Each structure stands twice: as C-alpha cells, then as structure tokens.
Image 1 (cartoon, rainbow, N blue to C red):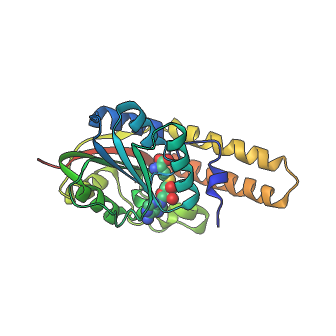
Image 2 (cartoon, rainbow, N blue to C red):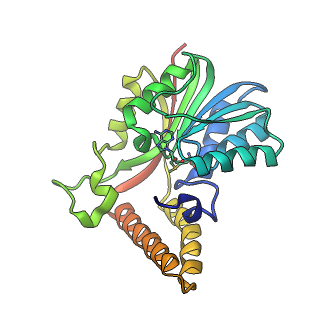
Length: 244
Ligand SMILES: C[S@@+](CC[C@H](N)C(=O)[O-])C[C@H]1O[C@@H](n2cnc3c(N)ncnc32)[C@H](O)[C@@H]1O
C-alpha cells in the first residue's frame, strides 16, 4: 500500500490551498466556544487543531487511513486539544452522528475522494439549520473532448467532470445555499507540491531501491498534477449554508 505518511511527511495540509481553506472556514463560521464542527477526511488533523486552538470549538474529525488517524490524535494531544478534537475511524459516506447536530461541517480536498454525492449528503445531513457547509475540491476549468489516455492517471478517472457551476449545483441539490466560491491561485498547487518534492529529493539521495521507487512515484504524480492544473483543473473552495 502507498505510504502516504511518508509522501506527506513534510506537510500538514494535504491539499492545494489547504491553509487558505481553513482561513475561509474560520472567517465564515467564526465558531463560538464549544460549537461542534464535523471534519470529514481530516487527514493529519491540521484544520481541526487550528480551528479548535483558535476558537475553543469542538471538532469531530473522521478519516479511514489509520496512520493519519493516529497522527491526528497525537497532534491533538500534543497541542493540548484532546478535550476539543475527537478523532474517529469512520467512513465519510456514513458519518456516525445524528441528523442536524453539528454547528458547521467541512471536507477539505476530499469530497470526490470519499465519494462526492454521499459525502455532500452527509455534510448537509449532519449540520444544523443555518449551519455552514464548506468543501474544497478539484473542478474542471476546461473539459477535454472525450476520454483521456492512461498518461493522465487519476485525472482520467475523475467522473463526473464538474465545472465550478456544476459542483455548486450538486451542493444546491443537497438543499444548501451556496454563497461564495473561491478559486485557488495556480501557485497553491506549487506550494502543495514543494514539500513532496523535498521528500523525493531526500529519497533520491539514498541507495535503497525502495527509496528511489518512492522518489520516482512522487515525481511522476507531481508532473501529472502540474500538467492537469495547466490544462484542465482548478482547485476551489465552496461556501454554503443550510437554510434556517
Ligand atoms: C487529500 S487528503 C485531505 C486531508 C485533509 N482534509 C487535508 O486537507 O489535509 C484525503 C483524505 O481523505 C481520506 N479518505 C479517503 N476516503 C475516505 C472515506 N471514505 N472516509 C473518510 N476519509 C477518507 C484519506 O485517508 C485522506 O486523509
């Protein structure tokens, strides 16, 4: 299995524009002390710890990848946030919370990884009336005609290919009112990649064939994502709200 903890060893946000999206969440939600936020696909728990540390809100963080779950839980302990940040192993398609119990819900860079429509449905279900739902994800700036070849890797597998307005329509279909969409600058991809490139550089300097293979895998993925960002893909954060 791919060693994601190693690939992402030098970064805490695991998506382009992650830090910016956390700031958009902070500004829009402005949680009160003890408010409950849901974080689907929390990764290394960076967003949860930033928000809990800044607002003293509670965050229920869920993910399915054990190394990230352990890392996020350890981070919450390390920052003395264990009373506020709860890390659970759970599927973002079936979140273990009752309807309308969360003051806000978000998923940074992962709805289409979790399963787009089930993830959006769970975010909308979990949040109270009036609560914010915020997601970031890839969207298509330009759609190619027809299918893409195998040289496009995971980009060729994206289905459906949604433009920003089509993605917003999916949020609306969950009964959410979209108030704003933020398109991240192209530099957000470079910033996201620069940490992985450092991991690749260090691995390349080793004589271990496993390290060399890891470096090659990282370099291939980054080259692919750079081509995709240049030709087709944007990264966008959608701010929406469940009507009162
Ligand atoms: C691109 S990372 C984003 C992590 C984090 N939100 C961030 O911004 O740093 C995608 C995350 O989705 C998680 N994931 C994938 N499928 C999932 C599922 N069905 N339910 C919950 N988490 C899932 C992965 O384990 C990984 O942590």
